Image (cartoon, rainbow, N blue to C red; front, side, top):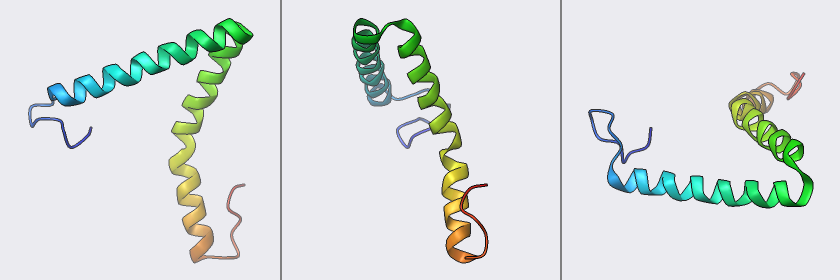
Length: 76
């Protein structure tokens, strides 16, 4: 969670508003993608984005390891 989250895990009004704004942007982009290329494209692109987010920590860790140990490949 972000620093705006209160101690009882209830998001602050600022955090809620920020998240709502991102969801609105995501909805607008999704609608544009569907209009231009169809639902399958939009869903596939969002799945790839989710995978990118999920794997970004692994890529960062691999990159750091490659800098500290040049004999290891960045990604296998």
